[in-house]
Length: 215
Image (cartoon, rainbow, N blue to C red; front, side, top):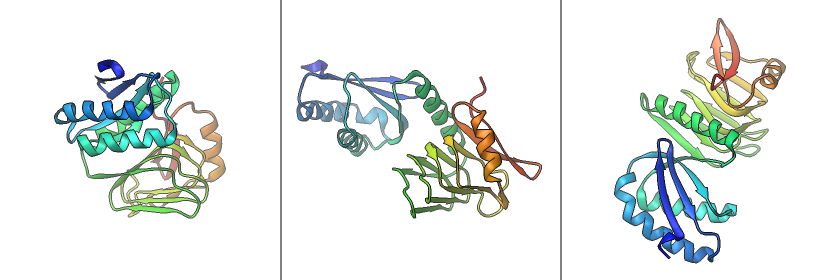
């Protein structure tokens, strides 16, 4: 029974290995014991989490993440997909994001932003989910979206053209950095030629897209 839940660490976060032949409530009870016994090792950390050995529904995943966060006090940066391609993208997004956030204050928003929703931040902002068409994000600093960007984003909203925008998939309705707005068609065309996560930055008065991770 001790093998129902195993927690393993790596440089990017933790892996939660779960048995797939027991009821979820039984598994959750064992997770609670594991989390409580290891809480002191994770307190105050910023980690990525991956689930291995069992396919969780969205509700089950949310339950586990809330339990883990409540007990250990960690910030869960993202949930890593076990697909090799997505895992590489997510891991690099986490590493690049957290290295920047250690230098300045930042905020996290977990969940997908839907049409007509607006999120504003007086610092940098990491969104752990999608920004759907019709949603809007405004931040004084950088914006990192660990998901798809289809809505509108304004980074460096107080005129900071050194700010940047990152998304795993970038096809925005509107993209602004500082006082500079990107042409939607240009962003769309550049996005088609870049695989994986993308970063938007300002260079010589224009917004350019580049791969977040150079191959």
